[in-house]
Length: 382
Length: 59
Ligand SMILES: Cc1cc2nc3c(=O)[nH]c(=O)nc-3n(C[C@H](O)[C@H](O)[C@H](O)COP(=O)(O)OP(=O)(O)OC[C@H]3O[C@@H](n4cnc5c(N)ncnc54)[C@H](O)[C@@H]3O)c2cc1C
Ligand code: SF4
Ligand code: SF4
Image (cartoon, rainbow over all chains, first blue to last red; front, top):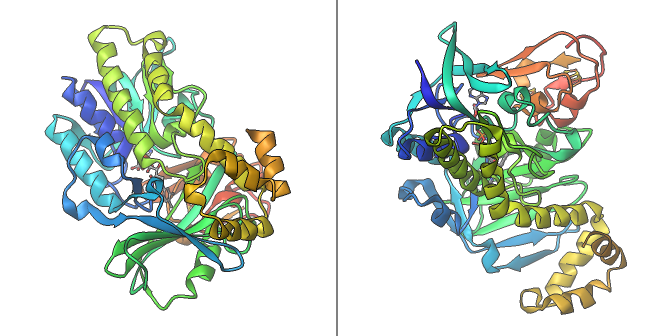
């Protein structure tokens, strides 16, 4: 068994990287440790409207559960502000079906897929990654490859072994728990977010409607004494609805890894921290970056240059595409971190009193002067 | 450290914060190597509260 490219991880990043590598005439293997692609789900399925254009793949209508036209933001004291700003427009997807359908597209393009196979180590020779060592059906097997792409998510061992990502600090992770629930009285085109130190310290609660009184109700918290599931149970006690699925996971919100390439190796998606620090959204960014990973790995092989020098093109290109937005989001997150419940109450009141969506940046700044603490944080950060 | 496997949701959060890389998440099993320094970073991020830090012991 020998491949041009081995992709570790078989969800959104892995499938897209392997799809584009296969489309570029490479002999590709994608390895997934689970026996099924896409489960257990670790996602709420929210994507922006532009995601479908980025993907360049037509999704079957069953994957798109609902079309989102706005959001309700709830303050700690219980007021809410409704926005239908275009930046909130998007979709709630059935994530496990998305992952499976992307894997199918990749397989159609020629990718081989190994399931229930755990990649344990990299084959490294004179500082070059030359394949993987995996456990399959009780046996350790060596699979040589010209380039390895680590798309193995937050727990990425590939990034660690290749010394590209040394793992995260607890403060850099949002720890999340989510129930998919039925019998919920929610508007099918509006997301809802709830803020407050009692509801979700360091994060927020989300309700992402999936149509027909079904929704993902989740909470993300940071650096808390009690686990995310505790806050989730507390929040949902207000509903008379039924749980049909439990999902847990963590999202890195500190910005991407410093280095995402090496000799014969690239990392992508959550493995590379390519997640928006304010929304925690990773699907869209993963699809942009992993497409580049697949294409550039293929180019490197065609040009017979698997060196880090060549593969750094990947980092340059993904940075060009997403770095600016990620940096801005990171700054917003730092502002958000500084707001206490009172600030959040005032902010939501302020949004309600002023037609925020039609205000210019200058008038927003002027209004921000009425919030000394917020203004101070903005000044320090921007 | 006590690890309550029954509570685990197999998400990998604990794996990524362990400074000694002692934890490995198989399909539905956590493998723990020896050498835990009881830093409790894994306890801090576990969404299920599956790792308890009260008792200092090898995980
Ligand atoms: C609760 C929650 C809600 C979220 N909601 C949203 C949202 O609404 N919108 C959004 O855009 N993003 C959301 N995210 C973030 C999003 O889910 C991730 O950014 C995205 O899944 C990253 O995809 P990935 O393919 O890089 O990694 P993953 O989806 O984590 O996939 C990695 C794959 O690699 C496999 N793997 C790992 N190690 C090995 C190994 N050694 N050998 C073989 N296989 C291996 C895993 O089994 C897994 O299948 C959410 C995250 C969480 C936790
Ligand atoms: S408590 Fe032990 S297992 Fe947990 S993160 Fe620290 S060293 Fe790793
Ligand atoms: S963080 Fe908790 S739920 Fe997630 S894999 Fe570790 S022990 Fe299991």
